[in-house]
Amino acid sequence: MKAHITLPEAVSLVITSMVGVGVFTSVGFQLLGLPSAFPILMLWVVGGVVSFCGALCYAELVAMIPRSGGEYHLLREAYHPIIGFLAGWISMTAGFAAPISSISMVFGKYVHGLGIPFDPKLVAAFLILFIASVYLGNLRMGGRFLTATTLLKVLLILTFLGGAVLISQGQSASLTPRHGDLELIASADFAASLVYVMFAYLGWNGAAYVAGEIRNPQHVVPRALISGILIVMTLYISLNAVFLWRAPWTLMRGKEEAALIAAKAIFGETGGWFMGALIAFGLVSTVAGFTLAGSRVSQRIGQDFSGAGFLGRVNGYGSPWVAVTLQSTLALIMLFSGTFDQVTNYMMSQVTLCSMLAVLAVIVMRRRLPLAERPFRVPLYPLPAVIYLLISAWMLVFWVKARPVETALGLLTLIAGAAIYLITAATSKQVSAPEER
Image (cartoon, rainbow, N blue to C red; front, top):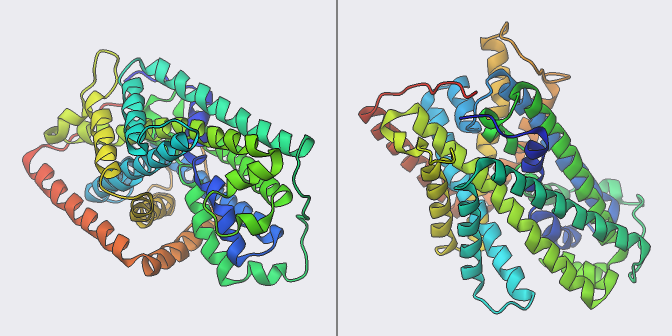
């Protein structure tokens, strides 16, 4: 497949894969256990640092073996084909279909809240189908659509931030450290809140899934991952600072719609409508980013296993139409079979585990192939990998204990994936796809 994705489009994919609903809903729940601004802002700093450490590790791996497929390709090369296949299976289901479904649900609710009288799930289904149609067409136009919607989303957020500073009607709370903040940062409430912050940072590895379609991926992918995370980290900290600075904490505390409450407090009733529109519009590019990245996983599986070769088929535009259709169909199934909370919790432990294995692969590959060419090398190795693995392991343990039912569903997904791998491997010849140019 011809490389058509440029650096701005790769950065857009990273940004739009992260900026979804998490940053607009977390602060209300964080205020329940952390009644101080500074510890909450530190949550977003810590989450950004951990994601940055993960991005450095992915950047080394993708620069070393620049093919599309994300964890499927990386874990296949670092460990064993079955590990890669299971990672790809998880990506197709929990990693992309689940968030596409849950984000589309939220989109439908916000559109309904803006006064458009359609059933939220039907609106969500329309969004999934619309984005699929975009990526079944011209690939270059799809990239431009992603860049344009991401840029507009960032501009809308910056407009909101600027308005909060210049024309706010809200309060003016202190964001500086105060007595007792260190105890809060060391508390269990801080640790528990970090799980939801990391959910908001999910998607930082977006460019890794389309590496084979990026021009000069050895250099562009690391730059896209690093710059995208730094931009999002800045936006996240700034948004939460504004929420805490200008909005009444008593009204936001424990509320999922904290961003809407903050917008009304800052700008009046019009602000609530504006924030709802901002979030709804922003979710369009997020679904687009997940659809683009997710479809490349199943396409890569189709290229590596002849028995699943149909997944790699492309149409006249060069788009992997079977992979895009499958990704969107799985999302539609989840949309009409679960709630937002069920779908979101189902995905977390599986996605975290795959990311941990990919980061660990940096250490594995350094030991296995110490002399291999590495256009990008993790600075301060192995510190970034260790930081990411320790924080992620803690989150995984916490999540498994807190969500045993969703964890069990995740295990069933893995078992199903293993069965599909055995059938596929037994009935087809495994091949390596030609390198994309």
